[in-house]
Image (cartoon, rainbow, N blue to C red; front, side, top):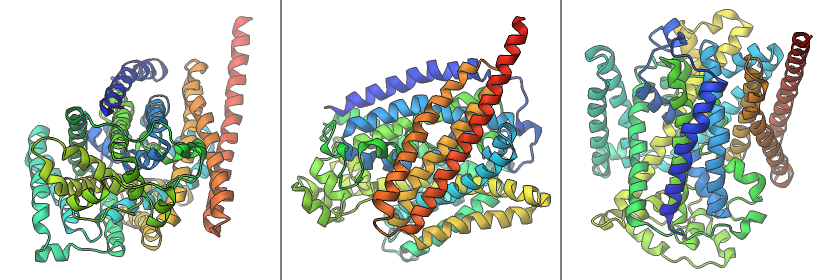
Amino acid sequence: MNSIVLVIIAALVLSIAYRTYGYFIASKVLSLDPSRKVPSELYNDGRDYVPTNKLVLLGHHFAAIAGAGPLIGPVLAAQFGYLPGTLWILIGAVVGGGVHDLIILFASVRHEGKSIAEIAKSVLGRRASLITSVAVLFILIIAMAGLGLPIVNSLYNSPWGTFTVGITIPIAIFIGLYLKYLRPGKIGEATVIGMTLIILGVIAGPFIQGTPLGVFLTFDAKQLSIILACYGFLAAALPVWLLLLPRDYLSTYMKIGVILALAIGIIIVRPTINMPAITPFVHGGGPIIPGKVFPFLFITIACGALSGFHSLVSSGTTPKLISNEKDILPIGYGSMLIEAFVAIMALIAATVLPTADYFAINTLPEVFAKLNMVPQELGMLSQMVGENLAGRPGGSVSLAVGMAYVFYQIPGLEKLMGYWYHFCIMFEALFILTTIDSGTRIGRYLLQDFAGEIYKPLGNRDNWLNIAVFSALVSFSWGYLLYTGNVSTIWPLFGTANQMLAAIAFAIGTTFILKSGKPKKYALITFLPLVFVAITNLTAAYKNIFSNYIPNGLTLLATVSIILMVMLVVIILESANVWIKVLKEDKEKRNKESI
């Protein structure tokens, strides 16, 4: 099938969904009120609560939620064929992920920009809040370590990538100072300057290699793990306008620019999708994902369709920066749909590669040998990018190859395959890093909220000692996992933990809607996705425990999975008790009114 068909279908489905379902939720279910004061106005402190331009905040929010999921997940799930992933991305984003993000963002704005644990306390009670706090903090640390892995694997021993990604930090600080003190409010002007500097950084990247600076910027995986944790600390501790906001905003332009360039490239080249619509691996036994398409497709593709991590952003930095309630729809629902389009582009980039080449890249040589496949263009591709591409599992390399494979077929660009490959590797790292900085800051908020319940002064966010200590604790926690772990010890938990958080968020969202005074039937928009994602993830966790963790002696992973399952079940039961009470009270009220 021609890949342009998927591009057109995705664009139409996502556009129509935004104008119909998104508008329905915003106007009927939530009743967004542009005249209502928002937390950024009420609690403006110049550091965490800052009224922010809609486009700048859209850039930050999209950059924060669009981590590894929309890039890596669809590439790995391509082993099932292009059809299962496409359907889950489009349907999941429209009725799952978009709703999830929008409802939690609105609930947080209406709860003074507080975290999802604080929202749980308001709608479910103190006990549920405590369980949610522990579960969310636990899942966040796992997620940050999991998201850090692709960055470390992409940048180690790569001075070009390290320089290009690293240079965005001083550029962001300069733009933050520029907008704060030099030219306040000149967003367009700052954007042009910032993007120009970033492009110059990308162009300079290849020339860094082989120089003394290149030697200095050549780090191994352990060193990068430490550097990444230190960056997380700075992003969490410094004022939001100084580093996190301008960096995420500028990075978003590069992200969206590259994805649009890929979409245009696909339209120009019109490459054929070589992967079958459905492969025999839907029944299990795949070389990349051993399990069956159900339930493992739905935890492999997370951020591109539905991701619990988004609830942390939607109840973390973003609600403290919203300048008007009317911005909640494009930022909450719109960003998720943009991310779904990114996921479709990543899926296409992986599936246009010859099928045998895709599996040769994403599996170890001894595993690929058992598939009885013969690589078609892998030797040529390896020669063109200047690296041996065989046996590079994890998804990031095959995605970069797929994107470069499209770009180099554009007339006039055929001699730049090596450049495109390394540029795409850098692009992936930059894409994921913006989630790391926001996630660490959100972790600081959560940990402070939790500590504040134990000893009130610890919850004071105006105290710089508190800010530094809690930022360091969060950064150290996930940094330690990243430093001591690897893909086999961290990544298996990431998918299930992430989607369990989505189920918790849906449970809280359902309760919020039931208590909002709106017609109770509107709660179905979160309740139905909750049922699906809870069943899917409990099934996946169970299968992982008894088919993977215990047989392979991974006792710690099995124990952690069981704890997460118990927490999810408890939250759902706590929520169900509240739902029954609310519905019973509503019925009694209607009976009295009818008398």
